[in-house]
Image (cartoon, rainbow, N blue to C red; front, side):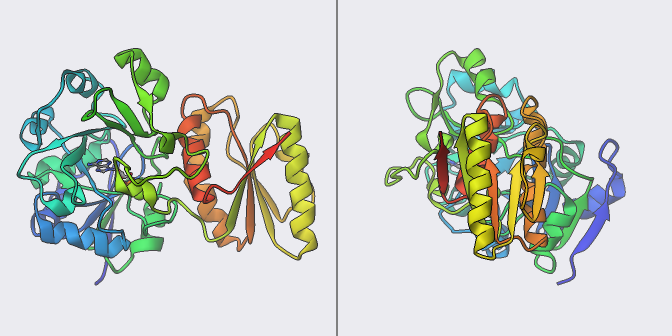
Length: 352
Ligand code: AMP
Ligand code: MG
């Protein structure tokens, strides 16, 4: 299959291009499109055959459910059942990087739900995504548009690297603004619980809901026993570059010293070492093959925006080992650390 790549204006998406993409969705095909978080791989959420193609293209485990993207809040009321009051408060934050897990209505195919009785729904804050959903006239199921287990795509080029020849179309509207996926919050248990930290911060959700818990897998400081995982996707490998990834966490100077020590160790073994540092620390290292800065420690949103792009860059530069600094877990830093820790397979070194 030849994948068509169309450049689209992010602010004023061209009608003819959106129409072409929507036609593919309606006919059961796959279109990758930009959202404010990362690029998504979209199909008609109500068409089991189309949804199965998403799993096949990504090589995604079938038990990992998809997020349904809508352009009109009213759609929640037929896609979900028994909608709690908290949902209304949270839907006021839409369009935005927040996914609500609700009880699924009978209309949702089991493929889309990954076999669960719940459904995940969000309204993305991106003109291209919204125009595509409206023009398709169906809700669009869309996981991140990468091969399962790889870093999520923040540009159309990343999508092409992973899915060229496997999907009908990629809509290219430039790099995504936030750079990490949406926050997933489960509203089906007694009190709201964050299953995955993301573009909408924990601090903001606490302010709005008062009471909100963080699932241990959201913190991701260790591998949790997920026999009873509310989302089976939590069990799978995620976000990983080809290179081995080690996260070093601790007080700033101790962390720098530990990383420098590890650089010496791996270099001695003839390994090509990359360091994922920050603006404040990047000049503290020597002897590594390459040092990249995630952004300023004072600016978590810059770190979120750069994360997945940099992980892919290390692979292109054929680095064997990436040693990454831990960053403060405030604001988007929580999502950044969740991705880094998971990407490393919980290969976390404490420096002190
Ligand atoms: P992705 O869009 O590839 O980042 O993946 C979607 C994320 O949403 C995964 O972490 C899923 O496990 C999660 N998710 C989707 N549907 C549900 C659901 N019904 N219940 C819990 N988590 C879900
Ligand atoms: Mg994903």
